[in-house]
Length: 297
Length: 289
Figure 1 (cartoon, rainbow over the protein chains, first blue to last red):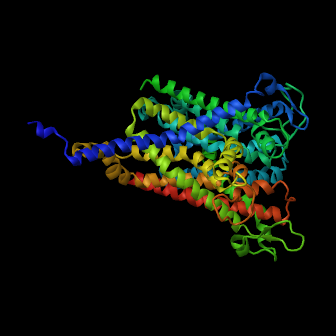
Figure 2 (cartoon, rainbow over the protein chains, first blue to last red):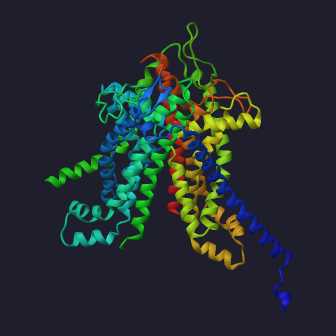
Figure 3 (tube, chains in turn blue, brown):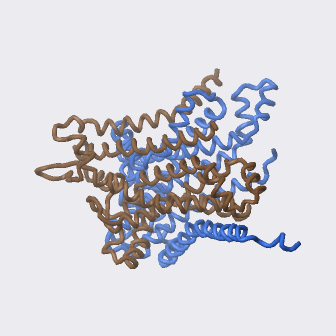
């Protein structure tokens, strides 16, 4: 009887291969993640001597070789807030159109294609567009407004994609119930669809913030500058028509254009930028997980 | 009445993506166009000459061939690393790990995708270049190898997430049929899932290529700045994107040099448009099936 259950060489080979394959694929997943965690750890260690509250609030000193990052930090906040104010309404309304109004015809397929391509346009081409359209054609000059608008267009697909997903997750029966009591299309959207998808939309908006905060190329030639004199801790140092510093640009400048910077400063700038972007993303992910767990339908 | 107005606004926002894509092409092309008519400029030279001397007093030459080769070599190297690892990780996440680990890995991969490109560039410039000098003995650490590795790490998250979607789209009945025949998971992956998901995996690779070709800050900082045709993986190169980023600031406004940089932008726009269109057609083809 027992002979029936002994492994034949073929089965043994098959199981061996299975074991090897499993570990190889596991290794591939790990090989992409672990070195990166090590690198991030290394950045934090190198940055440690400079990381402090004072570093965030101080202005750069001695030709940017010393001091903090306050003007860049505030500049990034300006750019993010303004680009968000532009991109969020357009993006959410665009998603509402695509999910609630658009029929499946050739024109709407072109819109879809345009959204995908807008997401795929290289960031430096967005920069060229911002320069041609906002700085020159619209005569906004090199300014916060030009840079923010460029960022807004660049990050629009992020908001469109996640809002659409949130809207599509609302069951069709909800809408049908609402139409059946005589509500118009917009009343249905406003009273039923949006309240049921608002947290998902919020996730998309948060992701837009993280994307906008990290971009460098689109703002480099439209409004961000190497240096701008600002008071320590000044909350409103820039006007809309001014140029500003930005964290991402500051990191590029410090690590390529300024010789003799104290070593820990670029590392600390990188850690602050990386840390805030990851924090914002983690918030979005946490929101999404929380949402999925309390979904009622 | 108010509702009609609002729906008009919604429609306008709906088509905004088309307006913006056309706008991008229009404005970039508009700035580039006048140089096409110049007698000392030829499109053939632009595309096929490796001689880039935009500021020469006597003999200005605008050839971006060396940059095309630069972009190509960095992208190919990045894909050689990212495609096997990305698809391997996608297979692991989709088929081999439990639900808890799967959730964790997906979150980590999503966070990796969020790392700003300038931070990647900084990692290339500091950490990676030191490692490369130490292990290969190359004179400079910023080169094709450095840019390729950085770009690979940047493209992996997109390849993993799209690749995992493609594997998820294979019906479970395929898996069940395979398991019922006594196949192991590996046999299932190799004989059933990979063939069934191959178009989706192709789309994942294409999107990775699109990301790598268009990446700017990371390659600007990690590939060095030599405008020449590379002979080895340890040579410095310059990519199309990095060339625009490096020189736009110093090119006088509306000069020929400035316009040629915009023309490079048109070229990049065209390449990424084609790659993304191909990926979209591939994905659409799957949905139809």
